[in-house]
Image (tube, rainbow, N blue to C red):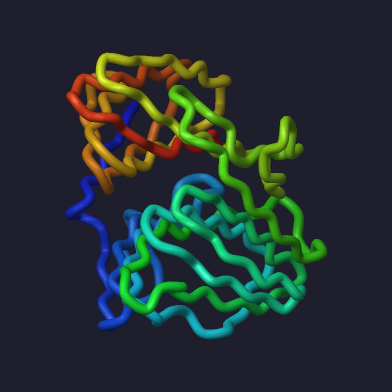
Length: 231
């Protein structure tokens, strides 16, 4: 079963310096019908004005992924990590027993657009950690985060796998789903067919009780999506 969530139905928050779209309940946006999906708690589609950002604040026991779509993030945290995250790169911050961090738009003239994703860990009280990597633009499914960090992927503290999906016009691919697993698809750019259900940028789809999915690009442009394999 596929349940579609249209981009325009997401929650919103606009503070001037930040314009955010919330797939799931977050901050001042609360919808009991959208409280996350499996271990996936947050997908925020954030636009940050030049020079602005999130001041130092704390988290604990959460796996926090940032995926930069446009611009550059300047990151600092209490573990001593000072990093620049350009467009196309993924960051995984494991909050563990507690971490403080700030995330700023590194440009004084251009907007920053990124996805902020929270996944609940399956163990708590771990040592905080930081990982960052560019996985390129290969077509098909590319593993980004895995439970064991295999093949150079980011190591996430949950029985979950995040894939980047890129399809050129006319391409398609199938994803087998292990019985009992859930899948969530977040459309990043372009229009994607998921078992004949069409997703546009910002749309999301919950997939339950299926043994496979077929992704197809029937448009004339490249498409990008994030695919979460969840417990």
